[in-house]
Length: 230
Image (tube, rainbow, N blue to C red; front, top):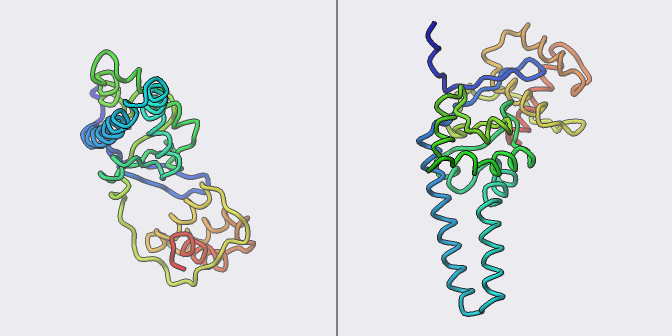
């Protein structure tokens, strides 16, 4: 039996029953984003070499340390602190996320980037390209080990207009998965029947303290607040 064609849409069902989705990034946009990041690192290292060359031994030591940090931790810094986007990824509308579409964690970013050396083998990232071509989610070896994917941040499935509900601050801090679930619930309100909305709202009753239509209304307000309709 032949293999099914690759699907560039990743769909994940959150624990609350809300479906999250994102478009996966293939090898070409990822290669272009990497080229931009490589150019930036090269320019920084080149400028640093010119500055430290006259200093002598101390300058050389500083140059080597900074070069090492740039080579290995440049992507980690941006992925963890800049919403999964290095400058190159931001330029092309890409972002690294966990496979459940939650924000990438520090440990996952470290794993995927430290294994970049393995992806480079045997030459010019041939190992990573082969892995991406064979993977259902276009994952290189580092992504497979870290449980991460690269998605098009600017090409998500379009949603209907937000519901007409006053923004409401959550009564208690929300975890990342809960925030994503409530946002998806709010954005998809027009696609869900009233009965289905109440069913899902009851699942999230721990965050609203009410059930039924009142829970739906309260979740819509929290969702509007989370997406910035404040």
